[in-house]
Length: 359
Image (tube, rainbow, N blue to C red; front, side):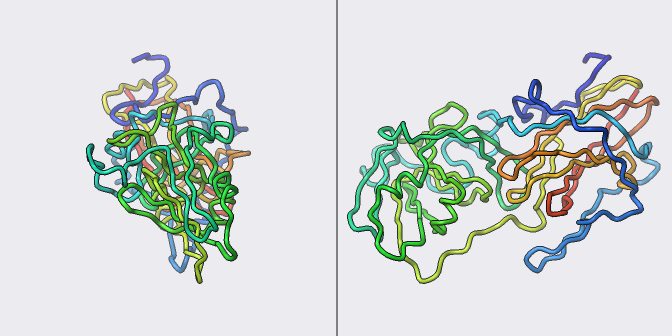
């Protein structure tokens, strides 16, 4: 460990996003928030739920409190989660990601239900047809997208390559009133989505994640991805797409209100030695899946005061990768608490905390 500059690391350290250095943007001088003034969004309502932000409170004697702690702040939205970390999160991420758990395909089953880059298009269209994603390379696009479930911490952002769903829909001669799209996996699982919702979000039929081709147990595979959408709709091993006219357009599940504006410290102090007067770098991610992250806020006194660091220019379709660099002049036990604020004024309902020791 370099005694001049230490970065909190440990078991979670391998999950840090690539690309932080070199493209980080320095925020202006962090603003100091007076903890006596309850900031807008400390309590908010969402779909009938009342959500209160909270801090994990420790006994005051357990750590040294520092009010209005200043430091250097950096952020970007460009990093991707390494595939091996995605594998760890999802079990076999490149196969399943986090759509509905499905029975693994078995080699030797009939051709029906075997995932390939061929997708059958049917429903309320005048003529059914099939597409081979490999033949649509000119239409392919690359996007950086978040994969995040309705509950739990933020856990994945990837550079994905695929064919826009819009390109496939344009090939179909739709009957009147088509308003729903359902992508079915090789296991027969599918979830209906509003067609316009998918088109507005530039949904992709993805066949490559972070430079690695998606695969099932039987061969190539495609998966539905779209920005600002919970990952339960990321149907894997897509073999059929139905375009249908429904009496009622299906609803789309949003993030559980308790897990809006997720914040995560992506490192740990385990096994690290920090020294008084030397620089320490903390880092993590924030994600809301719907509203841009407007600021990351840091507290070293249990939430009595907060140092606000704006994330100007951040967009809602990607998460924010942040770093906060500071130092401590005296030895002791300390605690960092982090929360995020969205453009619509919502504070993280579940804050993140990290306890550490300075020698």
